Each structure stands twice: as structure tokens, then as C-alpha cells.
Length: 271
Image (cartoon, rainbow, N blue to C red; front, side, top):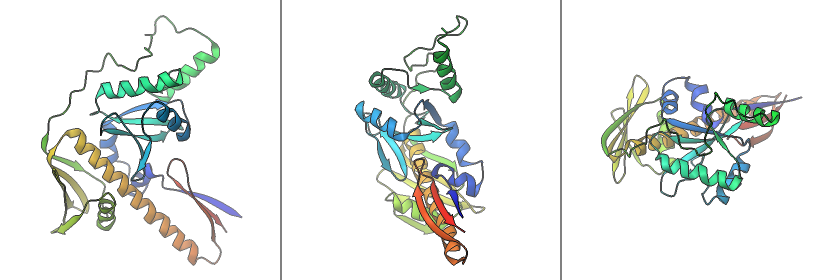
């Protein structure tokens, strides 16, 4: 017989291996997630490219740039493709992107939650008008109740608590995104043109500090880039450990290894 083992989706690697809290809580608080009605990344990729935006893979994540160097990422959550913006993103950039997509699609594509998607689908199926007591949701993605975001001024230092615990995996993750590191006295230091990254081991968990002429948004994006790559390294280590155990077992055989659309890895093992 054969069994399938879905191992550590990229977005869940740290949660599964290292716990539920910490870095993920921080990330969630700084996200502006917009759900789409699409369930396949291929469907949204075609829509994005037809709207004049890119759709590229880098460091194990799928990202789209605004008409600037800034970007957001794509994930599948609760079965739907989501655009994961940052709270530091310029709201006009977000609205311009959403308008472009919905103009090409000819319909509303972005929602604040899965419940809103389901409610919208149910109303269409029943062909019922919206109740007058409910505020009409504008087809424009602009949120009147949300204050206009203002670009953050440069900062001198930003500190983040992480769930990074493995020194070797952290160094590999940093090297994979082009950062050369120096390790000394429990600290890992990486320098770039306009900032310095410092990882300090405190009680076997690394604290992340970024110092330099970078905005809050840039610091957050750099942190998330490193976390994504670190999660990928954790994922690969877990996969290799399982494959080694299978190879040593006289009763098991690895039949297939497949990377799924959400970046999880599916192993089919015959026993």
C-alpha cells in the first residue's frame, strides 16, 4: 500500500516545527489581507499579467510589484488565493492594483474575508437585492473608514522578536538571499549599503535588529523575506530527515516527491 505525507507548507513550517506564537503573531498584525474568489494561483497569475503587473517567484514566495520597487506576496488561505499587503503599503497603490484587476475581470474580485465571498455568492445565487439596512459596499476598494496611510520616515533602529533557533539554518537562509554574515560572540551580523542586520542569540532564540536608513515598511519586508527563506530551510531539513528514515527502512520506499501549488511538499511512500 502507499501513503501520502504532506510535509510542512512553506507558510506553516515555523508554526509546525517551532510553535504557534512569536513571529507569526507579529506578521499577522502587520498584514492587510485581501481574499480573492480565485482558488488557483494560475488563474490569478493570468489576471495579474493581463493587468500590466508582474507575477514572479523569489525566495520561495510569489510576489507582485506595484509600479515601484515595493511589492506584496500571494498565498492560499482557507482555500482561496489572497493578496497579502503590508499595513505600510501606500493605500493608493493597493487601490490602483485592485481597480486594474477588477477592470480586466469585469467583476469584483477582492474581499475582506471568506465569509464575504460566501455571502456574495449566496446573494447572487438567490438573486436577492441587498437589504437597505446594510451599507452598500462600493465597487471601489477605497475604505472610507480607514485613514490614509502616510509614508514612514527613515528610522535608525528596529528590533523584532523571532522564532529563529537554528544558527546553521539561519546563516544558510541569509546567504541564499545574498547576505554575507560574520558570526562573533553569539551574534550574526550582515551589512548592506544602507543598513546592518544583527541577530543576537538570547536564550537560544535569535532577536533580529536592523539599523540604518530604512523605513518601517522596508524593515518589515526585509524581516519577512528572511523568515520566508528560513522557513524554506526548515522545510527542506524536515523533508531530508524523513527521506533518510525512509531510505534506511526495509519496509518503506519513496515513490514520488511533488511540490504542490501552495509550496507544500507531498511525499508518496510505499509500505
